[in-house]
Image (tube, rainbow, N blue to C red):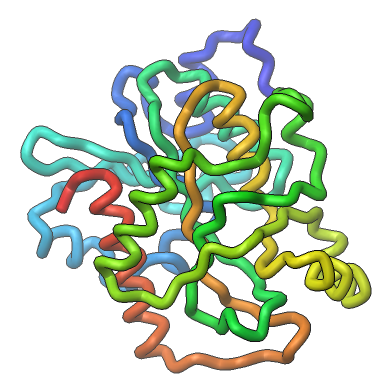
Length: 258
């Protein structure tokens, strides 16, 4: 657990590899390694957009084997894309830490989801406004009653506009965050579908609760990679790479870099 009695600046450098004063107002966060989420030639794509970049390796033991977090700059503007790692507890800790930094105002979560809805197919997106939480980790740092797992509506509408601009197929259906142990329990997934849940993941409700508690604006863009109730559907590598490029452009537009 992060204890704010310790030096906050030191914790920020350990968890994110940067100084708090260097962080941007807008942050993109993901639990996915960059090579999974973004195009294979990520650095070349950034150069094509005229964006300079710098990798910040994270000292934390669970993250230090990855390439790090990405600082992007263009025309006196900057933005961060941060890999926060998987696992609800660590993710919640790092989101809370981000929200403790006064400069941070908006957070866009880009991650993966599983679809329980036949109408939401692999490589389509869900941009949920409401999330049903089946986790209680986030309530350690937030109010179960007051800090609802809801996206900031203004930012949610902006993410929808960004998705439309990329001409991607997206939905705005009910989402649920559930613990990992239940991800492959068919009976529970059928129950979720029965109450109207269309997609599931393991982090988003925590982000929304913590962000609302600290008065930050947050939204989520979720790409469907799995359909556990309907069997595996394989997409071509070409289509996957196209989705990765569109995801990158959405992130860069959110950060006001293109």
